[in-house]
Structures are given as C-alpha cells and as structure tokens.
Amino acid sequence: MAITAFPTVDKCASIGRERDTVVADMDGTLLRGRNSFAYFALIAFEAGGILRLLFLVLTAPIAGLLYYFVSESAGIQVIIFATFAGARICDIESIARAVLPKFYSSDLHPESWRVFSSCRKRCVLTANPRIMVEAFLKDFLGADLVLGTEIGTYKGRATGFVKKPGVLIGKNKADSLKKAFGDEQPEIGLGDRQTDIPFMTLCKEGYIVPPKPDVKAVTNDKLPKPLVFHDGRLVQKPTPLLALLTILWIPIGFPLACLRIAAGSLLPMSMVYYALWALGVRVTVKGNPPPPVKSSSGRRSGVLFICSHRTLLDPIFLSTALGRPIPAVTYSVSRLSEIIYPIKTVRLSRDRAPDASMIKKLLQQGDLAICPEGTTCREPFLLRFSALFAELTDELVVPVAMENRMSMFHGTTAGGWKGIDPFYFFMNPSPAYEVTFLKKLPAELTCK
Image 1 (cartoon, rainbow, N blue to C red):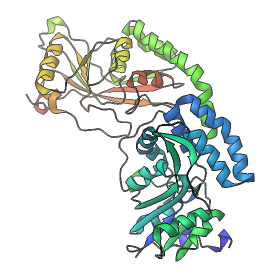
Image 2 (tube, rainbow, N blue to C red):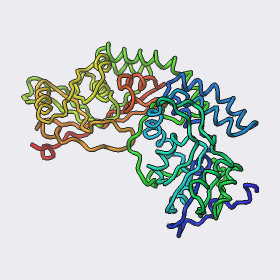
Image 3 (cartoon, helix red, strand yellow):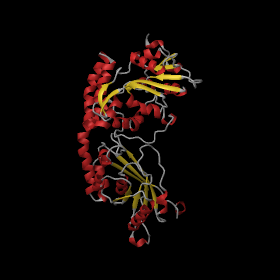
C-alpha cells in the first residue's frame, strides 16, 4: 500500500474523540521536522561536551548515507551509537527532562496536535530512543504510552547499541503496537512516511501528515503545560550547520571570554562599560540611575537595588551601568565566581533572621544589590519575590529590570557547574545586557 492512499491529517475530525485512542509517529508527524539530528546533538553536547558533539558531526555523513541508500535502521543505529555510547543513563534522563522539552515544544505540528490532543488515550511510536523522548511526551503532551527504541546499558552507562527487536521502524513498529494493545484496535493512526504504513493499517483510521516546511508550530500558550524552567547551554537548535559552527567557534570564543572577564575584573568599574563595548559586549542602560549616596546626606542606609534574575552576572552589569561596584547578596555562587567577580559578594544562609540582620548591616555601609526571585529564569516570566527585601529599609528601594540576549550559549545552568556560567555567557559572539532602572518603590508599598 502506498502512503498516498491515506487521507491527510487535516481531513481527520477532532470533535467527538473523547473516547478514542490515537497512535502517532513522532518526527514528521507530531513534530514538523522529519530529521532528529538536532535533538541527538543536544544530548551529545550536554552529556559529553564539545568532543562528543564533534564525534557526532563527523559520523553524521556516514549515518546519512546508510539511512538513504542502505536502510533507515542502519543510519539511526550509527547516530544512536555516536550520541549515547558511554554516556551515563542518569545524565541522559536529566537532559531529556530539562533540555529537550524546550526544543521539542517549539516544533509541534498544529494539525497533528489538534487530533492527538482530542483523544482520550494517546500513544506514540517512534524510532527515537524511548529514554530520549518519553519525558517530553508524557509530561508536556499527556501521552499515556511511549513505544520507542530501547538502548543497551551496562553499569549505569549506555553501550550505544540497541536492544531487540532493534530500531522501531516499519514492521517493528507494527509488532510493538500489537504487543501493547493486543486485540484492541486503536481508532486513529498518524504517520508521515512509507515505513509508518505497517502500524497505520492496524488502526481503524489512518491519516498521513504531509511535509509542509512553512506550517507554523503550536504556540506555547496552547500547550497543556507551560514551559517555565529549562536547562542546557545551547540557545538555538543545533542543526548540522549550527553544530559545526559551534565547534569551530569554541576555540575562538573561550579565549575571547577570558579576555572579557579579565577586563571586567581588573579594570576600574568606571572603565568596564567602555572596555566591554570595545570587546563586543553590548550594555544598554535605560531609566534614571540613582547617584551614589553621600555621607553628608543624612540617610541611614544606602540604596537597595532589587534586580530581576537572569544570570549570576546581574550584579556585575548593574555595577557596570552605574559605573561603581555594588555589593551583592547571593544564595549560591561558586568559589571561582567569587574570585573573578569585581564586586563583593555575600552568601545568604536561607535563615530569615540572620539574613535580615546581615543585609541591614550591609545597607548601613552603602548600596546593595539583591535578586529576590532566588533563582534565574530564561523565559519572559517574573518569579515570586521574597518579601524580605521590602522589610529591610525605609529609604530608597530601586527596582531594576535585567534583560540579556545571547545567540549561541546560555549563561546559566541548573544541572552543570555554575562556576563556568560567566565563561559561557561571554563566549557568545556579541552578548548583550539591558539594565532598566525603574521608579523607586514608594514608602507605602514597603512593610515599614
């Protein structure tokens, strides 16, 4: 049977499907993209670093030749081996939960999602390793069952080989579907290529998802679960070309990052703004920065700058915008960061009484910066503030909106070593920070 014998997915009704079961392929069906290289590249880089990514890029042409001229299964096995061999299973699971959902959710096919989300029971059949896709499909798309390729393990690490019956394509997909459902026949089958026909014929209705590169992905507000937190170092989805450019850039970007950090650490703060601009770091200052407090002004405390939290560099760029070092209180800063930071940092203990006492003492000595959210957030959300900052001073409380732009690497991490966060941020070709000083907080909005 030819794939063209099936009607297209836009002909499938989604109303009245509350009791139906849908079985869908992933790449090219639930997702717009038919090529999953970028997601393997994300795992390779996050789990094994730049050398693992390089190995994957070098083996990709071999995998492509096998995929198109020998068999799809052989090509996929090469990609799986290059990505997973030797990687820790716990690392793969962590990346699948915290990194991949951001990129998967930005590529969701609108017609497939319309049908998939309308059914009561949702199953996904995919040639991708199950460990790689299950977290996203179940947590974000509400899938009840995920059937994918199983990878071999040994002492907590992936071997890079696949378990029987092998890569889940063609007949293997149909066999897995029969094993999972038994005599039950799913109502809807969604696929996009010839090798999906065996499982689609086992369903009461089969629909094909035609390749349409110009179709717009489902927007985040239509997903059943909003994406607030995500991890990972790479900003963009690493297509083969972008992966190669990333590999070629790192030997240039790391020395450049060291030079930028040295300029910020060694030069007087009044010169850092101009030095960073000369080195390609764009700092934009908006609003009216308050002047430094003079000892003769009669104030009992300095200015408390309340910053939104984007990266651990927020207090550094606040000081850069003001042209003077502003001490900052933090929850967690690595020893390396404390060494290279050009400002004083003081650790909070997460014990309310001692922290309040310490912050009041620091304010008596001068200005102070604090990020009340307590953790960084990459998405356009403002997290819940701790009320402590509003109870500490009846003088100046100045809100500061921090925003950054990166083209290649994120300057934050949840699962990695935070000590190299500044290096990743400054490794971007031309990173940018926008510091906006808002109007000071009126006394009636404080707890005084």
